[in-house]
Amino acid sequence: MKLTSGLSALTLIATAGLTPVAAVAEGEVNIYSSRHYDTDERLYSDFEDATGITINRIEGNADELIARMEAEGLNSPADVLLTVDTSRLERAKDAGVLQPVDSDVLEARVPGYLQDAENEWFGFSQRARIIFYNKEEVTTPPATYQDLADPMYKGQVCIRSGTNSYMQTLLASLVEHLGEDGARDWAAGVVANFARDPQGGDTDQLRGLVSGECGVALSNTYYFARAIRTDVSGLTEGLDQIGWVFPNQDGTGAHMNLSGGGVAVNSPNRDNAIKFLEYLTSDQAQKYFSAGNDEYPAVPGVGLSPSVAALGFFKPDDVDLSAVAKNIPTAQKIFNEVGWK
Image (cartoon, rainbow, N blue to C red; front, side, top):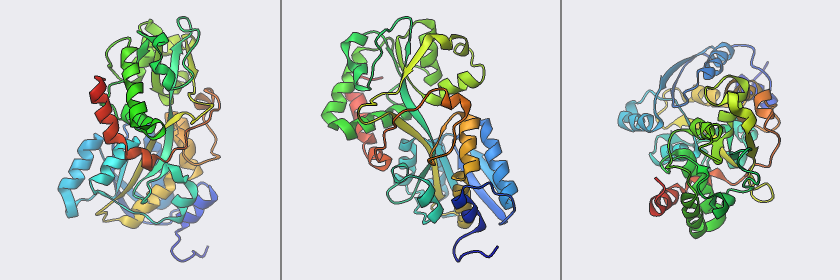
C-alpha cells in the first residue's frame, strides 16, 4: 500500500478504526506512565506486535514523573507521558514537559473538548464521576452535584479529600459552570453534610455505602463497574444495596474524568511517540480501555464492555476540559477556605 505523504500506515489504520495487523515501523518509544493498571499490558503488547516498535516503560506517581522529566531536561529519554485526570495533564503542560502535536488522526478521533487547546495533551479514556447511594437509607437521592450540598443530606455524604485530583477537577468544572462564588457555596454545603472526614479512595466511599456509614457517596464509575466484573472485597457482595445517579441530566450533564497523555518536550523518538498516541485512539485500543479497565472510550461510537454498559446511558458534560484545567488552582483555594480536609 502506498503511503500518503506525512501519513503513516498506522495513521491510515487508526483513521479507519481498524485493528493494526502488520509491523509498519521499528525502533523504540519510552513511556513514563502513572496508569497503574495491569490490564494496560495488553495495550503495550498489541502496539509492539502491530508496529515492531519496542516499548520501554517507567511507572510511578504522576508528580514524581513530571518532576523527573523536569530534572532530566534535554537529556530526558521520555517520549510519552501517560497519566490520569485533567489536573495532572495540565500540571505537566504548565511544567513545560510536553510539546504540541500536529496529528490528523488525533484531531479526527479525539473530540475537541477532550484535548488541550494547544494540542499538548489528549484524552484516551473517560470515567464519569457520579453519585451512588444506599437504597435502604436514601429514598430520594441527589439528582445533581448541587444537591449534595442540600441540608437534607446532612451527615450522609462520604467523599474524598480536597487534595485528591478527581475532586479538584470536579470542583474546577463547577467553577466553570457556577462561578467561583457558586462553587464556594457548594463546597461549604457539602462539608456541612459530611458523614465523616474525607478518607480513602473511591472504593472506600462505595464500601461505606455497604457498611451503612454513608448514605451518599461520590465515585468514578469504573470502581463500581469493576466490582460488577470481578470480586472486590467489601463491595461486590453489597452491590444490590447501591443505587446510582448520573447527575445533572437536565442541565450540564455528568462530570467526566480523563485519562490521557502527550509527547514529551524533549522526546528522542517523537515519530514513534505520536504513533503510540494515535494507536490509543484505534478501535482496538479504545475497546480495551473499556473491557480491561471498565472505562468509557474517548472516541465516539466505540462499544462498551458489559460491566460499563450495565450502568446505563447518560448525558456527559462536554465542557472544554482545557478550560476546566485553568480553574484547578481556584478549586484548591476553595477547598482550603471551606475547611474541606
